[in-house]
Length: 92
Length: 422
Image (cartoon, rainbow over all chains, first blue to last red):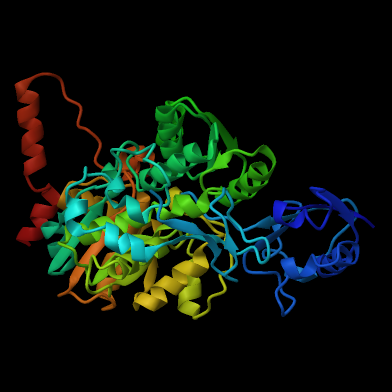
């Protein structure tokens, strides 16, 4: 099972500059582990020391923020599109 | 001459050069401009500021530009108004309005942040500027870009008020309306900013852009005779202005322009989009995003990136916050208009209604100085209030017709009179 993951600029140094990569995982937690296997060092950029997604990182599955889904336990299926996006401030 | 040392991550403290960067590569924390306050202290005085033109650039040593200002030469220095009639209605002794609804040229506080961002975009050599916006920011970016001769793309959620859409389009940008809410627009823009290399004022120029919001706080202090109010109430959406007002007050003390930087800061949100107020009341600094549902579209941001810093600034200052319903917001708009002759948009109605609520709750005392920040203009959001104001009476051009109408308008209604007599 494979999903597409869009990478923000600060993480592309881990992916040899690729802005999109393929990865595997039953859920977001497993996906992050798979990314770490493929691109060592990337996990600690995405997760804090307790393993949670960092405060200023947003993860979207097919456009939905995982905080509206099941966070790290959000399950994934073949062909899902994942975006990792730094939180950016508003412009009301 | 620049007083900026560089950028620093607010979370992990890593230093970065003065570049169009906005997130820390290590921890994704937001980057903040760092100044050389010792040099600013020597360079800046109350007299020097007073001698300069009445715009936000009178505080330029505390703003992150290297050369001369390139945009917004007439922006800022909006009126601080002693609000006797609104004060009386709210039952408080000393009330002021900081009226950014008449900011030049696009009638919201956003002219402040955009003046700085566009100046910085020009310094960095960008030829295209852009933003994600709920309307006011798009208006400001489009206008300032037109004045500076830059290419402009603005991204907004679909379903905005006409005044906000046309209020951008008139300046000639390309406007892209995204299906979804502001948070969807924001997410797309952070990906576009990555790919297209434009100056997104609230993405890759955010550290510089956000500094412009400090000028709201600088002006309040200067206009009160270089002192702070005891309390200030401001709307919170993405979380830019509130922490920057706090920063402004601290900086003024740091460089010796005021003696006391104590001022309690209160956040105002709409109940239909109040992620920060929910976190504040729960006593957590973890903000759960919400899906916005409120007439206050300009502050309908469910996933506020700087929300954490809003909560920090509120706590540090000893302030608080509240949220109000759409009905209370409409009442707030009307109360301000009918007591002070100022027509604000729903964000301003939220600020007025929240102030009223906090006073009633006893959170804001009645005998201390209070400033309400009015951040936007009601003429942009006419459809929001259209149904709750009196419709014109239509008569022919005939004096008798007016005489009859006048009698009707000034006589008590029959039902009412009867009830009164009984």
